[in-house]
Length: 291
Image (cartoon, rainbow, N blue to C red):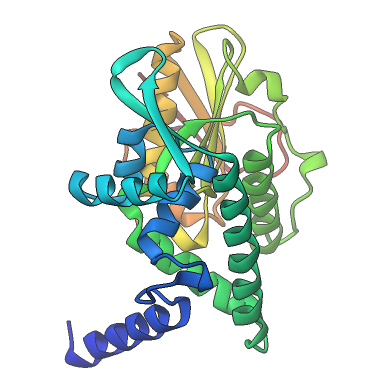
């Protein structure tokens, strides 16, 4: 790594630290530092298991205990034994804690809007932020089964369709494609998987089944912000694991020559090219894999 690259990264780190007030004793003017505010924020967004909270925030147990104790002394949170496992503890916001969480949310939204307002065009800035967050949080990207009709799935699929429309020489119209029914990508027939980074959908893949031993892989997509991080391979591995769990023994997929990254992924992970097996007007390459 060159000294210029290191200097530029350190400049960026200083700019972000100063802008968000990471070193302020009173983050966003609410009377407590950033660490305590992050704990309050995570609880407010639904992370109530103490072990999971510590893992998500990457805090050691000593610091986590001190931050929680301070919030408890302020009357903002309460802790109690887990209802199903007395060895674990759960944490919740009090009524005062909920008000404080909402105040932070409003201030954080206003701060974000002000920062974006300085950019002549915020989209390149947002794209750069997504890329940085994906790289820094690479090890925390998780893959979950999701409803193919849900918000996270729709966000991925809309981005996927838009990209196909840009990359295919004659565009892409999902109404002309063999678009799978949602029920074919939910258990017990199939599954739909979404990759999430701090709540942001970064990729998806569908497993389209019919209840038999043969199924198709559909709608593999990875956000530009996460490409090169091995996420496509992780999604495909997760889809294969879901297929095995559903007693599916053979997988098929189709793709297009305008997507060389997909072709390279399939050829490098054990997929065998076969003849056409459907009448979809868009694909020109067809693959199969035995599990």
